[in-house]
Image 1 (cartoon, rainbow, N blue to C red):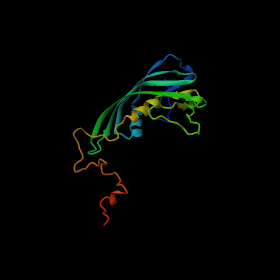
Image 2 (image 1 turned 30 degrees about the horizontal axis):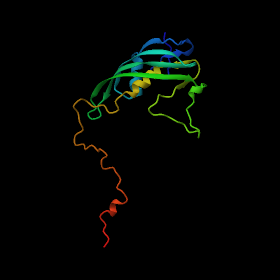
Image 3 (image 1 turned 90 degrees about the vertical axis):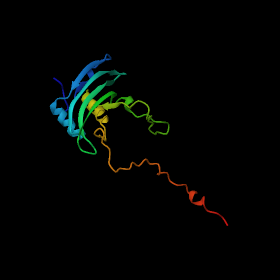
Image 4 (image 1 turned 120 degrees about the vertical axis):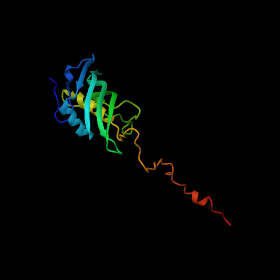
Length: 184
């Protein structure tokens, strides 16, 4: 029987002490109750399917790596017509977890004590407390990030809509007003 955290829509708790350096393969699928809860949490018309194949293993000394692929089928409302728009999610992901007491949980800083983040670098590890992590929550988060914020039914465009490209947003130079000024 699968352990769950009832505070989130889709949960799959993993005991950290049971994880070794060799990846454990896990397949998880949301049941009907969880699919309804996800639809409400994601503010979509429905979530018809959510499943993930995971590899869970130790990372460094005391960390855990959850790596996998999440797939989902959702239905959203078109932003123009409000008609149902079905879409699919298929995302690869990887998340590292470390205990909150781990030195790997601290944000890197420079000599001045400022936090240094590389936007193109790997994500910082997430922290966990106790002896469990929730792999279902990781799956849910990565699926949610892949949801189209502006779903549109195929072939539908905004009528009488002029797209602002931002082309004219450039502020004029303070000297632009002087270019036509002539000294007599």
